[in-house]
Image (cartoon, rainbow, N blue to C red; front, top):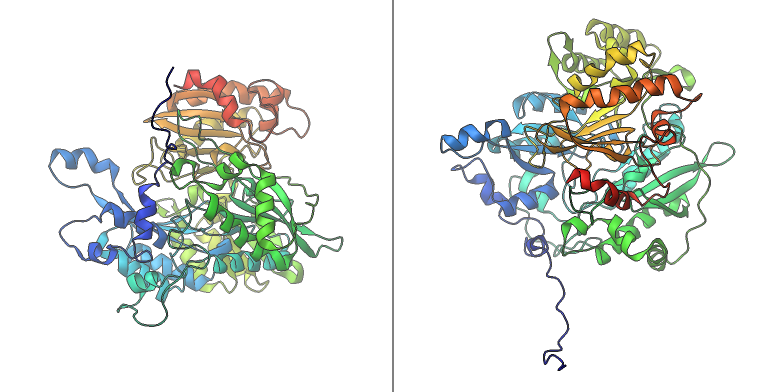
Amino acid sequence: MSLPTDLSPIPEKPLHKNEQLKAESNWLRGQIRHDLADASTGAISEESNQLCKFHGVYQQDDRDLRNQRRKEGREKAFIFMARVRVPGGVCTPQQWLELDRLADSHGNGTLKLTTRQAFQFHGVVKGNLRPLVQQINLAAGLSTVAACGDINRNVMCNPNPDQSTLHAQVWATAKAISDHLLPRTRAYHELWVNDELVSGGEPEDEPIYGRTYLPRKFKVAIAVPPSNDVDVYGNDLGFVAITDESGALAGYNVLVGGGMGMSHNQLETFPRIADVMGFCRPDQVVDVAEKVVLVQRDYGDRTDRKHARLKYTIEDRGLGWFRGEVERRLGYALAPARRFEFTHSGDRYGWTELAGGHGHYTLFIQSGRVKDTADYPLRTGLREIARVHRGDLRLTPNQNLIIGNVAPTDRPQIEALLRHYKLDTGNRATGLKRSAMSCVALPTCGLALAESERVLPELVTNFEQELEAVGLRDDEITLRITGCPNGCGRPFLAEIGLIGRAPGKYNIHLGAAFNGTRMNVLYKASVPLAEVRPLLSPILRDYATRRMPGERFGDFVLRTGYVHQTGTPHDFHEQRHASLGEAI
């Protein structure tokens, strides 16, 4: 048999087109200014859309109107989403009031609190987009920069109302990481804040990111045991605060390689929980964050965006290699990880007392949507509270709100406003309702395959009567629903996860740990929404009668064999090989 004459090496896979777009964008400027000024359409170009994500802006359209507008020969009803980056989720009452005002003047009259402790404006038309972002910066003193895109996003941290002093230190760490990992390009201020272009001065440079930034988005969170409300295992980079015997901050355990997204029918994609890599001192944490980002910058996959997250870099190369590369750049070794324990991942509702008489009040907000309804004037009530509140406001990773640092002399007034606007009734919801989360999904998210936020109230209501009957009214069973498998609502870390597969159909996953340390497993695929309750109700009844003392629902379904899991942290994709036949 003759050998082939062409023995040249197989060419490497070409870079994804976004890599060239970033490289040629003039540090994220592209044609954004030109596209925003074009009054002939409500849209911007796809290239500008990709670059706008770095500035915290997504182009969307009202999908409820797509078919009708197509029949009429009109372009899509284009709108935009703007995300406000709030490190650690802490803002002032004055900032809340400014954002509330902008929701009416430039958005759709609502504010959305996200699962990453950020604000989102929805329904922004193109003509309002630049004025909105400008006012977010100039009037509210906040920013949308780096809230999206191939870059480090909003850094989450535990609101931790039980340990206010420790929270202050952890929040400062979150702010320091966020500030250090911000892009340095002047494009954001030129495009959105200043009236004139910035010219002159030294040439621009991105000392951390380089001209092509990261291969994909990058997420950081800081947890404070025993609470894992940030779902620290679901982030590219996580830090777990470790205290000494006196309760003082000793340092942080470093976790790497988490990520919740996947794609249906593509086994090479999968959610993954992070590995514990080591321990660092408080003065090392920003340095460690930078070096983790640098390794991902240099070794992340830039040919396939579905394989570009840090979780795949570590899965492919191994934690040992990754740690070695991080430590080489640090110039020192990380210390061995220290022991910690999480007991829950939810919020603590109502008043939390602090030393000195101050207190925090945590308010349940379903799906994080701040709006008024006929019988629940949530947005109006929070506006009036913000006008008199002298503490802070904290967005929780579970889409709720903490009215923070309420002085003893101010508490009667805050409580009176909660009663007047019926907001004190919100925390009386069932445990399932208070533990449920959803992403936005339809009609605005372009990735959504099914409903999420709009069907969550009905979904929860369908279960509540039965839960009351079997004595589970106050049980905090975590339920999360998303319109697609990209993981924005962290559904793979829910005891009951519903992941949109097609219009009206969901994959049901069961068995995650209540404390967020174990992912769930596919139970049944492509279930119509109307069949979710009949399918799960017998399992909930069984749980009510056969659970062991203190046993959580996620542990129960594993113990009793409703789903099976080998127990290793990275076998989700292997389990899908066995169960995907039903799903395809």
